[in-house]
Length: 339
Image (cartoon, rainbow, N blue to C red; front, side, top):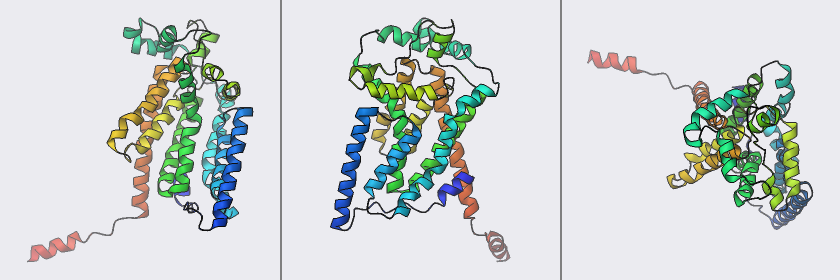
C-alpha cells in the first residue's frame, strides 16, 4: 500500500493545455523539432531503444519539450513520480545475478512437456515453436510476417511506458492506477523469475538435447528492412537480462495489461481489435522461440491476478481513507417501533 499512497498523493502534473502566449508556442515548436531530429538521428545511428531506463529518459526529454515553457520543478516532478517504477526496472535488470546465486533449480523440461500436452493433438506431438518454425521459417528468406513480428516484439519495450507518459500529461486520475498496476506486475514477474528460473525454447535447443533446432529469430525482420542497428540493440538488450526468465512471459503480460486497462474505457466495438494485440504478441513470442505457450498463458494469468488484487487494494484504501458516515438506522428503527 506504500506505493499506492505515494503515487496517489503525488501532486498533479503540469497543465497540458496549449501555451497561452505566442512566445510559449514558438518555444514548444522549437523544442519539439529539436527533439524529433535528435530522436531520428539516434534511431538511425544506434537503433531503437529497448532499455527501459533509456526509454524513460527519452520520454522525459520529450515531455520536457512538450512543456518547454514550464518551470524546472514541473520537469523534475516527472522523474520523482516515476522513481518507484525505475527502481523496480533496475532491480529487474539485475535479476540475472539473483537467479543464478540463490540456488533455485533451472526448469527446462517441464514447459516442453506441458506444451506438448496442450497442443500435441494439433501439432503431431511437437511444441508450438517447432511447429510454427517448421511451417513458417525459411533460413535465408525473410517473410513479411518476420518484419511485422519484429515490430510487435519491439512494442513490448515502449507501449506501456508511452501510455503511462501520455496519461501523466493528460490525466493524473488515470495515470496513478495505471502506474500501480505497472509496478505490481513488474514486482510479481521479478519475484517469479527469481524463485522459478525457466529456460525458453531457444535456450533449451542450444544447451540441451531436449529440443531440435529452435533458432532465436527475433531480429531477422530488422535486417530485412535495413535496420541492422535496431536488431543489434535488441540483441544487446537480450544479452544483459536474465536468459532463464521465461515464466511468466512479461511480453505477453504487458500486452494484455495495456488492453485490460482501457477495455472498460472504450467503445465495445474496439474491444476485439485491442485484444488482437496480446494474441499477436503471443504468436510472435512462440514463433521467434522466445517463449513457450504455457509462458504466454502464465503471463496473461498473472496480469488478471494483478488487476484483481490491485483493484481490491484500491477499494479498501478508499474505504479506509473515506469511511462512510455513521448510520442512525438503530435510532430510526426504535422511533418507528414506538409509533
